[in-house]
Image (tube, rainbow, N blue to C red):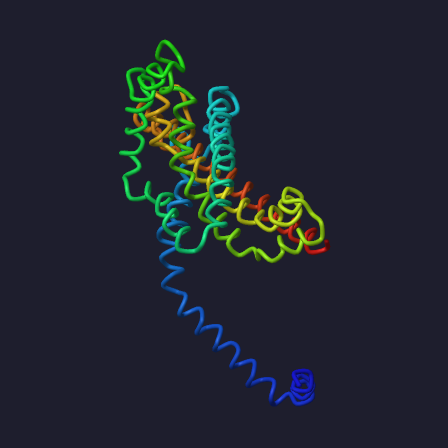
Length: 302
């Protein structure tokens, strides 16, 4: 039917012109409806980011220059900051995967009402300020904190160990804060998996472990990748937790930007750091999207 209409339109140019005008009017109408949202995006995101790009190319003499980017290549401290940022982000994501995947799997196997009750425990940290949660971990992990006292009392170790103002404390605090961002999309993906597929695999002779790795895990992979990507990208720009629990020893990009603005008041150098981190984040997002498309294509073939 559609092909007949297309043939009639092509055969009759008089019908083609009104349809094109109607299509153009619909496009302009949709653009008009989307105009407020587009203006908000431009005002909130594009203009500040564009200003950030501009400041990164302004030298100390007020002229256009690449001196801020040259400093990042010249001084090894900048490389260490980026390495620390990506290291903390990757380790936090890995910890969240190791804890979050079994937790999401457990919630997905529960009945709907019971899973909703346990999901409240996962969402409970969102009800408390990020700063309060970070300082709560500082109280728990310090040398005379609750965790050290309890471990000494039960005989795990004899003297207090350093669990804060280092990489260990930073990873513990960030994993606690980031864990819900992994569990939520992963739980949603797992909940959509039909349990009959696992039963069918068992009826065909597959062991529970074999059925899990061949059926359940590939189907949950999209939620795992999405949650991991959210956690990793959010960790790249984290400031409060590394600053408090790291004690100045875990310097990430956000911490370095704050130090540059407070000590040197150099907006150009701070903007250059932000631009490089933004570009790196966009590259990671693009690579992840390509990887997801490739995985879906390969999975579709099989």
